[in-house]
Length: 287
Image (cartoon, rainbow, N blue to C red; front, side, top):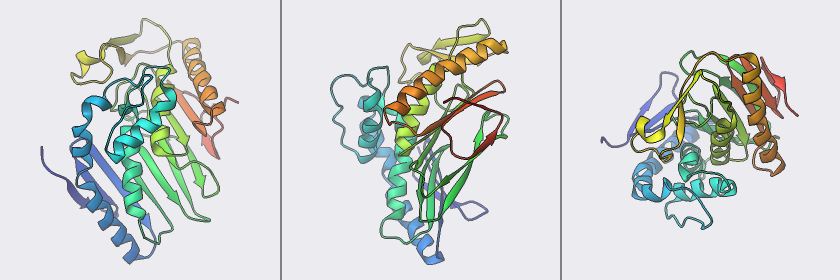
């Protein structure tokens, strides 16, 4: 495997890549501060992947009654994010992308004077928003036919600083059938873990849905023999709404527990939003 790589996108954003980690980073502020922040991010990026690989066996194991004693800073963020969900099947890998984004954002910000910044790890995003600033984000419901299904604005006065999206079409495997579940939470790792579980819960049984044991699809899957979704055919409207309602049950439970701020669930042209900030899209609201 090649080592860490750094480059700039045509619009000036920083692009860092190493193995499966693919980051797009953007900071806003005085040019000297932005460039210094980018250098800090590159320095921190050097051993991110290796420290995860060193503890991969533990990070792929289901979290149960004993708190996993991992060593690496990213691994610690992963475990902390999934620990509140240990009553269901979850491994620390459910929060890996968000945790990497968080760690890299912290490195980016260290000692710098910026207006705002973000680290996007394949759609799982860690945000820093200075006073009076905001970010506008788009929700893409189908990564193979990318279009903005909804958009939202996160302001400095909002609590959320993490955005994550999960679904059966994404780069990670899912037990559910959601096209996309986007979650806002206090941190990116919290949003990542929650989006994984909510996407799992957007589910229904129907002959149009094909599932296979996770390890037959991806040999090193942390989901083992659990059945993951590999195809979802056209579903009747009633089945779509039942699946979305099942996801909403989990959303409500997580919001009550203070684990997430908001969620947007989409499936085959229908969507449901729960406590989202100013948002426009084809959705109905779940309270």
